[in-house]
Length: 459
Ligand SMILES: [Zn+2]
Image (cartoon, rainbow, N blue to C red):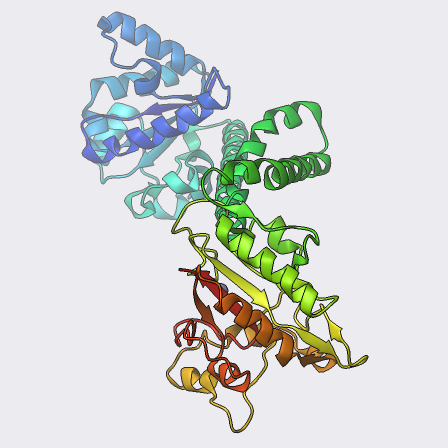
């Protein structure tokens, strides 16, 4: 049983434009599991098979008899076509109340239409306009230029107007649900792609882990019915895979490729200031950098008992040239950022805590008599130079005093190491701390300010 029999002539070029659209529509119905599509379209149903004329006529007759309604694209060519006339006459003969929706999309000779099709032009005042029927039939995206059509519906030919409307409504609802499903599918693909890109940018491995964890999706779909629980299961799967990879698998793979993880927990007095650095796989360096950092941390602790060296962002575990956004230069395992040392204002004693939870964005500003590089860079239009400071809440700053002694000791300890090539710190702090080593440089206005952290890199 079909909802529609699509009747048209192949003589008109314009109608040929309808082919791919209807075919696509019908293919979708097929993909959705409709073995009997509610639409008879000859190219799909009959294809290019060669039929004897009588055979083809039988085939068409059968289809028309099994269709609720016929949609006829009426044009001068249609009226001239024996096949079209045959289809029109067939439905008139086969049905007690033939339902035809004629779409007159080109000016026709009404005398001929009357003679051949029994199709009358209604006087203007009596023309019934049913544009919504077209909306039912043709989904919005394949709607043709409505200006091509004169929609009207010679009502006296169709007694079962309600039946037609019902049939069209069913198709409309079906098409609508398909469109919704397709929209959901595309939203899903877009969402997953977007999320994997974001996860790759933030954690390097997160995007791949997300795709791997999605392989369990069919299983989750089968086992869990409720949508909420499904989402929960998907998130749990991703997290389990991610944690397993981050803490067990990635360190093993990264090592032979030349990068090692810095200690996650307090070990030989070197630790991440924020655990998130490790959770996001941003704590990988070349083995020699790890060795230097560990040595200096031990040394610092010996000289200043109780001190731990806080590291900030380092590098991702894999691929030279893969930037650790927003640190563009941290892309080869040779770079490491370190937190400044501070004194607690409340106790007056050294502390391993820092005003900024991430170590960035709370600056030891230049004093009045010192060079103000931030101002200089901003005046050159380098808007990014002090950007982080704008986002970081400054409320904890008042609880800390910059510890120049220990910070100077950290910088100098790195500076004297042979393998260290450069150290970046803001010029006013270099002057204030009397740092004289040549390796201690100004990083340039294209970077970000370094009066909140120290950047060290291997040669
Ligand atoms: Zn850095």
